[in-house]
Image (cartoon, rainbow, N blue to C red):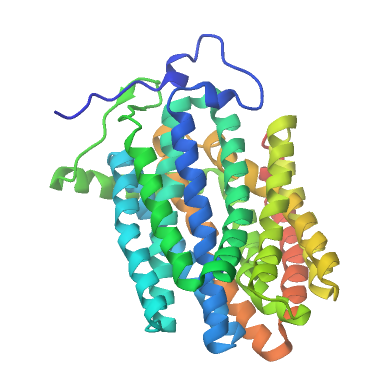
Length: 429
């Protein structure tokens, strides 16, 4: 018998007292399990990015080929974001998440086998990156919308701050774990760890019952099944989203900032193993350097959770601009420890950008549009792979360090220009 969906405790309590404090959302039943599953997922996705970049760098020695590994991971966000958002709004969100996790586990096991037997090729790393990238689209459009269903609007800001903390920890721990496992057990074992983590994510999510989503009025709404009627309704949802979302000026302003920052700032991430060559370090210290951004984001996200600052739109933009300045500093430093510190500080500033992103999207969109809005956001984030290709091409021509500096400086200039034209994001509370 299919279990009856539970009501969303946070939504049901909209008129009653709401828990307070930095861990308030964890008081909602089942959120802790969902958050833990998401945290482990974040570790696996950053492990995948690090492992793919590291192996491609070993196999090819080409900065462009390394950047293409990151491109393959983030490209599904651009091409599939809107469709994934419509799926999130129309179909059972919990079931969608479980399906993507159980599909990725055997793929990771096959990668472990290919690497262990010496049969791995660059194209295999690219294909696996695409598969994990599809899972990332599902996580952004579906699991985070499911969090909103569970905790309700009044706790969603706190829940998203905790999500940002989880993402930052995953960034840091994923790269560090990848480097440590390669150094201790080898590259094949690292992919085996990824497969095992997917299964734990699945076990955590399967223990969360079906959660009733809420419509604009706050009443429970059911999810459609995969029938022809539901597919036709999904197509109508897509059309409605394409008509409605562009008219939302704060949302459009936010999307522009998102696209610029991902295209010209975050595109450097797969390049870290290449940038680490100047220090002549092994896989463990390369992983430590790659974890620096995530460690900084973890520290910044902790500050956001504890301080709960207002003016989220200003934090979103200001954090991105300061992160770009510090990225330039990181790219020019020639001492490992100083470069690591600069990258950690870059992460602290970028946490301001990352920690409020989802909450901003939810706050400026109606409940029934939020899955599609997250899909459009993922498409804006999906400018990242194009920035990675451009950065890789520049690195081949002018060197990796100069390319990173040029990209960050261009990001500052373009972002300021966008805000002069579309400043609405700065006014979001």
